[in-house]
Image (tube, rainbow, N blue to C red; front, side):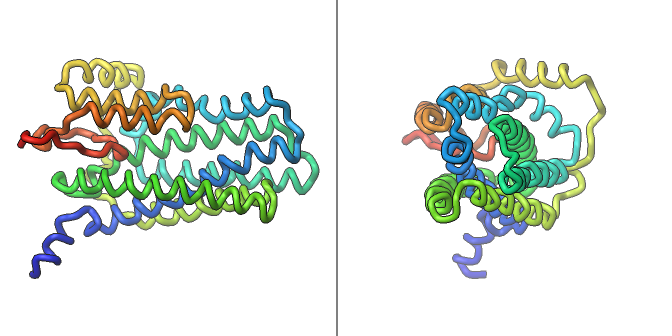
Length: 282
């Protein structure tokens, strides 16, 4: 085996299931970025929504982040791949109702808010399952490479989707543009369905109370070393950060202040945490 072939085999890209996950993340992020442009434009241009109504629409889109802890606990109780597929299809179904209602002349700001809640809840459930599933898709030594690839693809997909969304809204209007996001979730569901996950990754644990699982997880963080606590704090900041504009700065600050020791035991590392090594440390 050549050196190049050995290097390729050592990366997360060598795992077909990871490639499906990466593709799934890319298409959903691109599609969601289109909706980020299309939904407010639809509210303002087509429904003549007020400033308050647009703010309420944005609030309801972020509201499901408040139940992220419950989503994380649930992701360990059920098959994660099925959770991702169900979340994708629920989001697609909610989005399709927008152009249908617009075509019938029955679209309201209230419906947009309801769709925003469904989209937010689907994203929270999907992300929780995907983060927990990642360690089952790659070898332990490939986790850092997988994290960096997901982070890079996510950034590109989000930026590309936002630009495509603006162009699509200008070309065909905001209501038809939403169909692009619905299609992205359908494609994601197909990609996730093609993943082959080791059976051990989906075997349920002994059931405990959901609140107890959440409390155990919260208590676990302060007892761990600094990098482990920082990873958990990174996820918490993602929930609490005030919107998409502030979050990149919060994420950059958290990563710059955190040192990753690759020898530490990893449990369920977040998929969007990029590893940094302090010069002079092993």
